[in-house]
Amino acid sequence: MNSLELVTRLRTFLPPEAVLHEKEDLRPYECDGLSAYRQTPMIVALPQTEDEVAQILRICHASKIPVVARGAGTGLSGGALPHAEGVLLSLAKLKRILELDPVARTARVQPGVRNLAISEAAANYGLYYAPDPSSQIACSIGGNVAENSGGVHCLKYGLTVHNILELRVLTIEGELLEIGGGGLDAAGYDLLALMTGSEGMLGIVTEVTVKLTPRPEKAQVVLAAFDDIRKAGDAVANVIAAGIIPAGMEMMDKITTRAVEEYIHAGYNLEAAAILLCESDGATEEVTEEIQRVNEIMKQSGAIEIRTSRDEAERLRFWAGRKAAFPAAGRVSPDYYCMDGTIPRKNLAKVLSGIEALSAEYGLRCMNVFHAGDGNLHPLILYDANRPGELELTEEFGAKILQMCIQAGGTITGEHGVGIEKINQMCSQFKTGELEMFHAVKAAFDPDGLLNPGKAVPTLRRCAEHGAMHVHRGEEKFPELPRF
Ligand SMILES: Cc1cc2nc3c(=O)[nH]c(=O)nc-3n(C[C@H](O)[C@H](O)[C@H](O)COP(=O)(O)OP(=O)(O)OC[C@H]3O[C@@H](n4cnc5c(N)ncnc54)[C@H](O)[C@@H]3O)c2cc1C
Image (cartoon, rainbow, N blue to C red; front, top):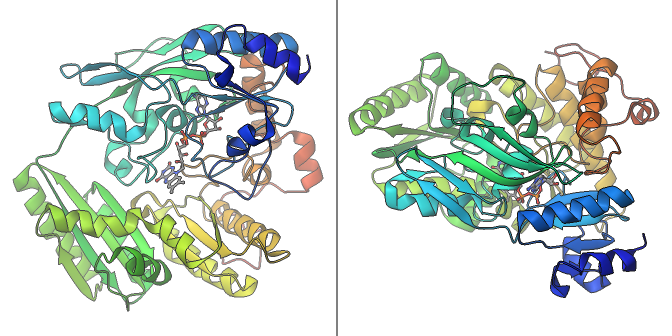
């Protein structure tokens, strides 16, 4: 079926404005948040109901047309990058909150609902949806499920996978799967976990039942400044070792705090090599006691300045800088490339030193802002796409950071997914047998490989051509990188 035939077919049940095929209409969909990679899709479809999604899938399946799902397009790994001969399936119009049950503390929502909109709707009942990606004002819950997204508060409250109960998913054949349930455990394989983080490659999420969490009585944050990034790394380990699970524990290095301060005026110490934000939430007495302990640990870990938020306005101001770190990068550099590796916390200082060395080697600045409590790094490599060769250099720098994360006993993604961006690094992270298992899972759901082809799981041929070797965790195969 050619594109015009497909347009005609789709318009038998979708209004004309819900089937886009003119070049200028397709342009807004040619990339996600990873704008370095672009591709115009053949067609964009904007269904409004689950039934319409099912019909689109049936047509594409019958004609072997690739389908790429898209939520809000804020993904940072190119997961929603379109396929040139495929349909970009936008779920943005499925944006209704179907049910909110304050007694069961659950909400049943369509996939295009914004993450923050769930908390806004639940606020009247003193509840909220805990996973809070920094993009929560825009990103969709469907995208969150597909990426297993995290956020500042996931250290204490868990990732998306820990905060959802049920999914309605359409297979590429347009058949409905109802996955999960209200109980703590269920018979059979854990398909809810399998589907979470599957990056639009196994099915299309058409409904999500999320858990809602009671709003804490009180939240307070400690802002600690350090003259040495290693001391800040040790402070993170010391807080966890003391048996404290903060509501959030985030770190920013000097270049980040400077970029952010110029933009947001959060009151950060500009001389510090690193600053840590450590939040406590819960009952008032509990928070007061925990904040006191965190203060002591920061002091013992060598903090040069410690401040505790005195009221809600100050707490939000301390966080505002952290939340604006990505846009702040956009103000100090024409382009930035956000990496997303995770490492065991004990290796934070070593990996950060390694990134510093690579930054000097490549002559590219790198801002480090990250979920320190989870060991989830977000190095933002600053570059200029208009300078010939600089994007390629940036990609190489980024690839080395990810290899370093694997060597440090970590992984190439913490929350942004693999998409197209980290597909070659998958060859380093996993052995052939493991990749074969991923392909077998994919084939069980989508034997023709029509859902989001070319993303997340590399073919064995690609790995062979890429020449990547499997790097065992903790093994030293890159002598130029720091030793672990
Ligand atoms: C400034 C900024 C800050 C960010 N901060 C964070 C952060 O703190 N934590 C974090 O985890 N991420 C963060 N992100 C990344 C991004 O916001 C998340 O990955 C988010 O979950 C993507 O949601 P989306 O709706 O934009 O999905 P999209 O980008 O549209 O799609 C992402 C992936 O999900 C698939 N998909 C989308 N909807 C569906 C569906 N209904 N069914 C099946 N597959 C689907 C797509 O095919 C694609 O593979 C940030 C991004 C930006 C730009």
